[in-house]
Length: 202
Image (cartoon, rainbow, N blue to C red; front, side, top):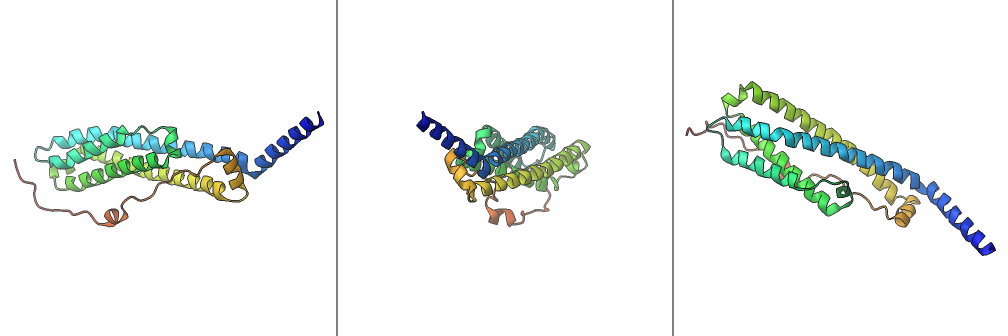
């Protein structure tokens, strides 16, 4: 009986000790990470929803480069084929695959906007310009949402790696979470090649 009492007391002390070593902070930051991740996904979905309208509007320009449109369509297809579940933020390999797909879509959209500059009819098309403004606003929202996610994950990972809270992380299997990084920095830093030649008539 006495042995049971002391074991219970020891277990209670351990629990209280762990709660004082960041357990509650892990719960709070984990919820913040999930919330910020949901916002990232929300903004990516907003962009995905805009793309079909943009593609359909651009298709109205008979001489528009089909290859550019195809790249956007294919990149969107790859990005949306990845199921963005909450578990994704705990799987570095899946997270990197998701990030790469979104990066490819961003690159394809950027190229599309550059090519559009060569088409006066699109530049003066009010419907397309409205979609473009919406896309730019969405890209800004994505940046803000990603930055919030990066900050909350950094706070969580710092807690998971710091002493003595790293002991709590070890006991409860709180692994560090993957974060966004710049993919293919050399390619991103290179300015896009812009041709001012008139598109060939068909």
